[in-house]
Length: 215
Image 1: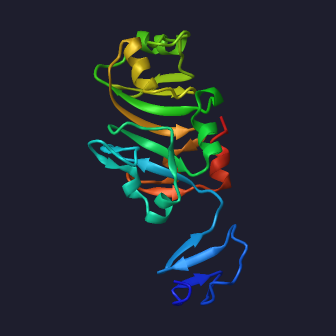
Image 2 (image 1 turned 90 degrees about the vertical axis):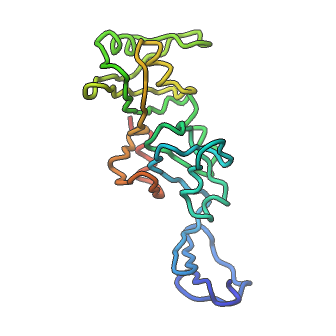
Image 3 (image 1 turned 30 degrees about the vertical axis):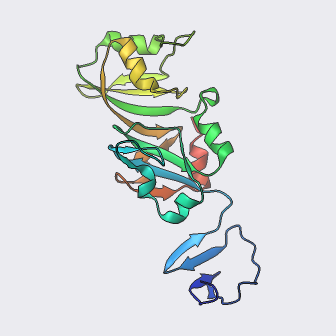
């Protein structure tokens, strides 16, 4: 593409592929689309229901189908997972250390969810979630950092462990059935503030990344 004059590099069309540039922050334009060269990329997506966080989905479409090919081929991975029937804020990156820092239960990065319940949640359910419930296979009970009734059939719940199916399992242990789950925030990064509609994504800058730890 460089030899054919199809790539604009640092604002100029270059036809000599032997030219050298400092890559970090370099602007490359191909077919009218501008890309910024970065060592790593950090993305936020408003994951819709009905798609899986997998490159090889079993029965549904993949979140990777919502990304342009250059981002998929550079190896971005979901930071934590959302089930195919869950929606909301999903982070993706090709930075393994970042992925571990945000998703590891030991790092205690908070995640906030709106959980729809089959029956109206009772004060007793809220109290159990705040005091701690024991999940199968865990030695110690898990407690929500914050839990409030949301509407007639919902709970807003904040956790900082992020274990497998944790919110659904905690609600079941507290006596409530979760019939829908939507992640609204990770740390201080709010999906609403990003302005993303379902299936849309954006790249995160330093300010947004700092919000992930701002809780």
